[in-house]
Length: 357
Ligand code: FAD
Image (tube, rainbow, N blue to C red; front, side, top):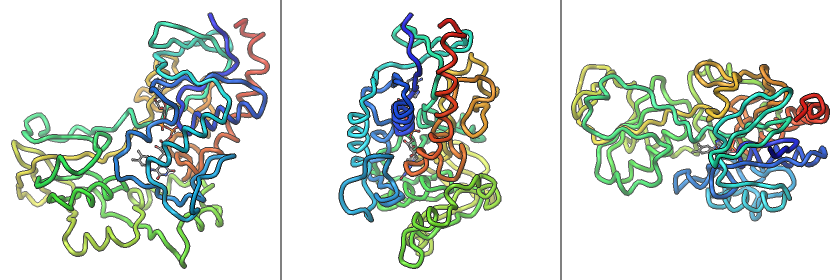
């Protein structure tokens, strides 16, 4: 069976940064990605998406984003940028190669791919993202609901929803951005457990990312803050708060049930709706590690700061709050790579002989 020193599963921004960091430390990895090109999930995000951080705060190590550093690049620019980033890495990237399962083998691993092949390795970076694993909560009464229930992962553009009555479940960035876009031509209510909390995009004339980076806030392990605040903070130039204030967009406490063609609101009133759009987030897409014993029963990785606590030689990159507020972002991934890649390289250097791989 083919042996490689290190395998990066996933060729999105996290996998590409991991591959570059491995190369810098003298290890030549192979990147395996299920899709037909490197760059990750960005091509599948909704059509109007622009980055929440300006270009100057959104580049990966070694390659800046072209153009005005203060603009907010569109999704397609990120897709192109990541394609360029992948080309200049000089790393072997095998696309259309889905990892089905990872098994332990001595101090290393056997990786089984969907095309029936296998390879052995001493080190794995799991950089599989979360987009393929949308969280779809079971809503009370959903089985008998006659409208559509969709996840925002399936949303691309507002046209199919024109003239419809839509409830968007969630109070985070995706819920508000997509809800606001839909409200141009549809009647939209955001249904959320907590009131929506906004984070002004500009402070003292500068983008919030200037302050997040210059104060060091971005580096802090602040998952507790999100729970304390009661949900994520929605970045806003003022347009979303205005839309809620002037009735363009409505927000209500989470409904209690779906029933037939209706939602039943917390105050007992019923309303006919065409579609419920779940903006309820994602969970790590780590199914290929399930049989390895590296995950909790509900599929979450057992790790400390991205380093597996069950398997030496296994690290993660791109997990939400892996080490900080910025972990699962373009601006944060390199800092986490600097934490997880050196110990992985140390393991790879000593593992092959011991493992007899
Ligand atoms: P992904 O981009 O999801 O890439 C994972 C890759 O792994 C995919 O290519 C997939 O094919 C591959 N893969 C998965 N499983 C397997 C397997 N078993 N075998 C082989 N390959 C596999 N961040 C920002 O910094 N700024 C933003 O403005 C921003 N906006 C966002 C908007 C949305 C709607 C979402 C969902 C996220 C946004 N993020 C943003 C967060 C984050 O930067 C992106 O989600 C980014 O795509 C994460 O990169 P990744 O490489 O970790 O994962």
